[in-house]
Length: 254
Image 1 (cartoon, rainbow, N blue to C red):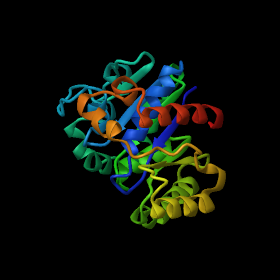
Image 2: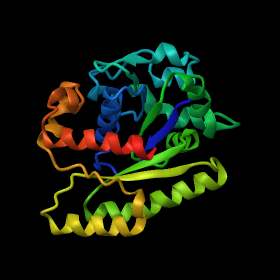
Image 3: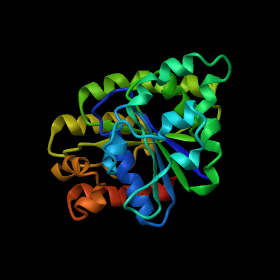
């Protein structure tokens, strides 16, 4: 049965989608069966895997609110073993739709995903940078969370609220929820601030911090515009090497 992992950080611009897509791609390259669930109406994970149509039919919105079966909404990608449950612009109305549900509105995503858990080793949920009902659904469905964190001061400011949200979700909705780890992104070891932020995160999370930090890398930034994970765009660049190492660490740790 798949482990469900939510990639979540309420602060935008931390490399969350990049981490979700590229880690999933390298896990698939190593023989794992991975499904990416794009739970963000901006659909960045969807376009990062080559689907640029923001009005896709049979998207995650169709599965959540229109009764479409999970399997009918899943798309293949250019990497064997990596599948996508795409987002679309319709998902912008998801908070309103969830608000209309009177009972168990926090468990809608979990109920839908449970039907396909035997088909995968991992299900990765790419969350929007918010703390609405969609994010709550992701935390309720997940076994654990990966928190991508850019090595900048403001990233630390939002972390306390993120941790409080996780604590509340664990207490009231999902007692088995874990923090699987923190992934440091856009890391430049030559930068004093980046080193100081890393030291603070290491102090706060200890061995929950992945040893592999993802460096600032132009090729990583370019790859989504071509609809490709970095392993297909430039597997020799520094960003690709880092995600390959992160995937090995992830398999050992989770």
